[in-house]
Length: 114
Image 1 (tube, rainbow, N blue to C red):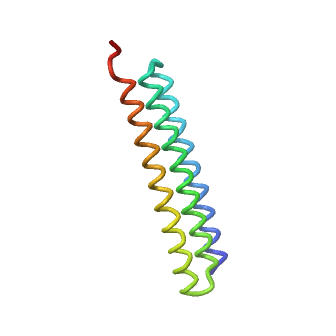
Image 2: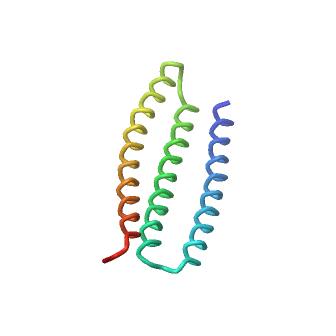
């Protein structure tokens, strides 16, 4: 049963990686089609950082699934989930702060220069 769960996690991870690669390629095509300027540069940075955060968060989810598949008992499951929730909440807060700062910078790049 544990081996089946681990295989399913790995298959899901591979499928998600393919999906994210396709999303990244599509975004790169779109950004490549838009004339480069200060505005698009700022939003491209936001997009790239968001994609990096998405990958980090998904990797954490898959690591959680792997740990849960190897849990010995219910208290172990609860400890793993609690630790994951604490770490991810801190991570999400930091990511939100950074994305907010990047969005503000990108929006400021849209302001007309006088």
